[in-house]
Length: 363
Ligand SMILES: [Zn+2]
Picture 1: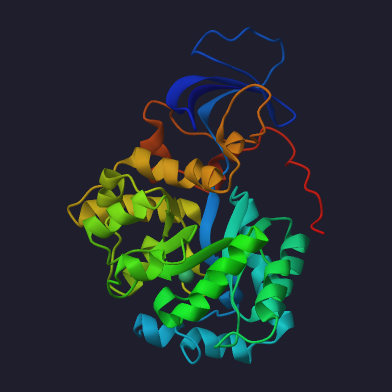
Picture 2: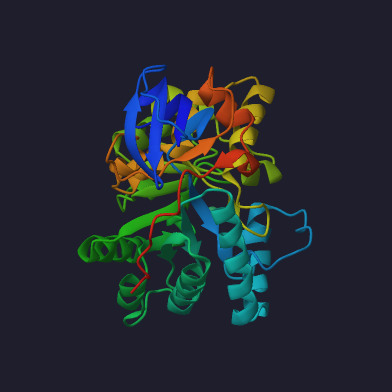
């Protein structure tokens, strides 16, 4: 198959053609220079690395009715927020089935990987790991210890099962526990992630203390906070639809101006569908509505390129002959690719150039 149109990847946005064989990229070149192969399928479109959902809570996917109109604290704060009551009152079987459905949906929508904050300790991580295996979606699971102060070997056990630790917020932890969690993550070669400055501003010293790999939200961060985060080399996952439910908005134009490494997430599955396509459009439109427009290029990079860099797999975001990338193709006009991707793309326009990459079953 040969796609004539545009390429959006680690090397930027450009016009060109991509030739695929069995899902792998075998040739990339300038527009109109491809050799003709008789019988080859030809389409016009945009070639991108598969998107990553950079922040989910799949554990609350079992909720099927409109969530109460409450504050962030009433909704998601441990231990008695709406979400934690939902988790407590739902059986593991139902939770697992709901998480699996959400992951199957992401797979259908072309998402290659989700980065999930999983509550409920070691058992929570195991439940998601098993559901992900049966759904065939790659998931990076950030588990959370259930007891404070930290007790026994829960943290070590969690770090054996999970890809990292995902905390509700640095300010919910004592400095001793936070230091111990950060140190244990480093020692185990795993990552540390946490929500920060979501409902109100926190001092960056609070959340940068543990040298986190990923911060989520920064809705209430000031421009100088964002500079500190950038200088610390920390990536931020933004979830604009989730913030909007509580009357807030990440200033994405400022994120772009400062140069904060940014990825996109869909946050709680009880609030929103885990669709990166919807997130992209909302990010763009809501920034225009607020009179602080963010560039479509920045958003496209946040969905398709930056997550692979953050994951330490930049080769998955480079569309070149023989690369690791297994790109997807969108049947969209290629003249202004970032704008098309951000405002027009949906899963219905995806053309898959070959069978999905073979995945090793998780150990
Ligand atoms: Zn979250």
